[in-house]
Image (cartoon, rainbow, N blue to C red):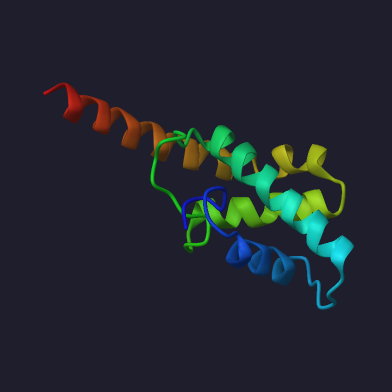
Length: 111
């Protein structure tokens, strides 16, 4: 599954529901969590510098997933404004990693 946007995002929705401790099922909750996941995929890709065309899965464990899930947690609690300050170090670290990856790919493509 590539970032939850092109395929069924059921895995990401499940991960977010676990993170938010959502144990009930109803149509409104499913809709809201689905919207949060869709939005978070774009927001976190942008914040971390993950190119749109990059093959990347937020459903794989790692720093990016942790940032993604925590962003969704903050979004579920209507606290997105607090997220950036609380996760600035993690975001900066992941962004540096992606900058290195992107630069390496660009150099490889140009040779």
